[in-house]
Structures are given as structure tokens and as C-alpha cells.
Length: 148
Image (spheres, rainbow, N blue to C red):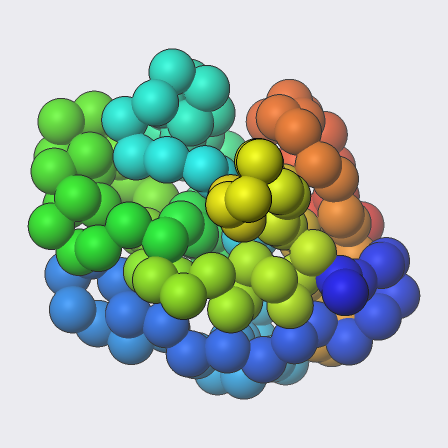
């Protein structure tokens, strides 16, 4: 399963670390959405990636995009991770990894499914405008937002 550039983005509603709900359909026609799927709170790569976005937050906000981290950890873990690193990105709770699976952001690690580091940009039209596994640079993500 998974998505490709040009595909409709799978709809979802997820809670964030503050208890609010984020529904993708609420952004259609309004603003692009960036989803940053990451394997674990407070792990080296995830911290580096989300802190890099924090450090460039004003530039991301100028694009008008909504930016979210997505991971399977609970609200308490997300809140601790966010506070510890003063993150600006709301962290969404995908406990059962259902959203990550629908976006193809899952990999097998022995017999366990883990979230694969993946960045997805969804245009205002609800279509996937950018999809990349790994840790693309902020410049690459920002460029994708601008062209979405």
C-alpha cells in the first residue's frame, strides 16, 4: 500500500499531543499540508529532523502550509519530546500506525512494523504533491510546498 505523487491523499483524523483533533479534509482548498512521519520520539534522527524544521519555522509559516509530525507514540511521549526540544510542529498520534500504513510510511523490522521516516506534501487540492522517504533538506521540502 502507499501513495504516489498525483494520488489523492488518504483522509485521516488524528489527535495531537495537546488533545486537539486534526482532520486532513479541513485543509482542502485552504492550505498545503506537510506530514513528517518519523520512527520515534527523542531518537537522534527524529530530533535532528524536527529541530531543523523548528529552526526554520518562520520560513515554513510563510508558505502558509500546515506542518505535522506523525508517529505512533502517545500524547504524553509527544508532549515531553516537544517540550524538551521546544518543537513548533504539532505531533499527531497514530497509535495503530493506520495512517502511516495508508501513506506507505511503514517498514518491517524483523517481525515488527515500524514507521519509516517519510515526508509527504499534500496540495490544497488534496493530491500528493511530494513524497520522499528519508530526511530531505528543509530547502527541498519548502520547494515542494511552493510548487504544490
